[in-house]
Length: 403
Image (cartoon, rainbow, N blue to C red):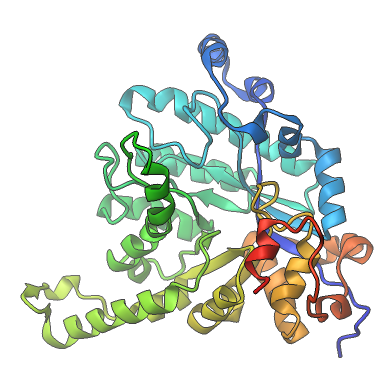
């Protein structure tokens, strides 16, 4: 029986970190150092949170640990942040490298991965890092997946999203990627896709930023559609595919839509005038594949996101994320944010979402986290209290769930 004084071990399935340029220089191969110095001298940082004191949260262990402790977060899955060597912009927004950029950009993400190994080693029980790969060259990608596995980055890999206007990298439904999916399945390496990625290049018009905001949710989830409909989940049933910071309220409608078409294809070999060869017909529905292969890291979720995820992929494939240290994150009010969406949940289900699911997927040792949780974690009774009043400086995450 759960005691109200018991504390939750909160694991955020979505945080971000990265090194400074000076730090990354220490992790670059020597042959790239002169080129790096030339690139660094010309680079102009457009992001305020990477230019003022807030940038320290990405790599300053003392500051980061203090803020995570104050926020009640015991463990964190770490996606990249900052700007790796030779990148044109913030790591998540950068498009896949072209042929003339590839060698240097690849050296840049490999420097990040080396840095990340050391950063996670500073607090191995609390930090699980996600390594970066490029998929321009599948042999290089496979080498990097093996390196990431061998060096203990149990968060898996961040799959580069391929925008629809990119013609120098194969789209994710291409059969050539099967070699990569096979290695990820063999090594039990999760494949992560983060929100905010995959948009095409927009014209420099006043409305373009709004176009991006309107369309980025679709482009971010496009890898799911490509992987599912190309049969990757059928061929690799053990593949672990994670969608993070993308909500989930949209998923039931999409799955229902795809199920209807897949059922029609199996029954008639066609959808209207579009006919399909027997070898291209999937034997199961989209709803089966998302339950089999997909996990959702729900960052600053609405209750509708949680309800949709539980109904569609099942409680065991749902996780919660704070999105620290981004402006839209739940921090420093994560406990209040948890109360907003979990106050009426069974504590056993809350533990699944906050602790057990991310621990199993990403390799956390819950026993090793227990002393941290006993010191900083929110209590069961605390999370069970509905939120009736917001702090005066309520952030975006709290305001989203205030209605």
